[in-house]
Every structure is written in C-alpha cells, then in structure tokens.
Image: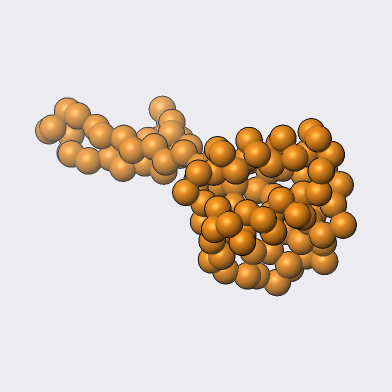
Length: 108
C-alpha cells in the first residue's frame, strides 16, 4: 500500500484522524513558464511563476519582478518575439511603464 505522500506528490494537507473518515487535500500548483525562444543581446531567458517574472540577463544576473497581469505580459512578449522586435526594449519599456516592478537581484 502506498503512503499518503506517495499517492500525492504535491504538497498535501491531511486533516482529521481515522475517526473522522474524511481527508482534506490541498494541492499547490506551481506552473513555471520558461521563454527562451528568442535572440537578444541583453536577455538570456524569461520565466514566469505565479505573479513573478524572472529575467535572466546575458552574463547570468537574474532579476525578479512582480506583475499584476502576467498573462498580458507573456502575450505581449510573444507578439514581440513573433514580430522579431527587440525583447530588451520591450522589457525595458515594461519596467519603465510599471508593468514589471522590481523585487530582487541575484548573482549567477
């Protein structure tokens, strides 16, 4: 017989004992969207997770940004990529326009 943890590889929250006959399970989904299908002299990759956008610049420096509309940001980014426009200019515009708000910087 599999353990409760083995049945559910995601974060679990089991409550109630055997007497309660009910189990409550909370699943936490983290979907990470990695975008790297572009060529840029400044940006290596862009990833999204929840309302956070992580931008890795060429050279390895990573910055985390909050976005109130990640889907809108990704859709606009994909439009820029398909049109073969500058991803760096788009990101810079998004930061100046407050579509992306700086959180942290980490070294590679």
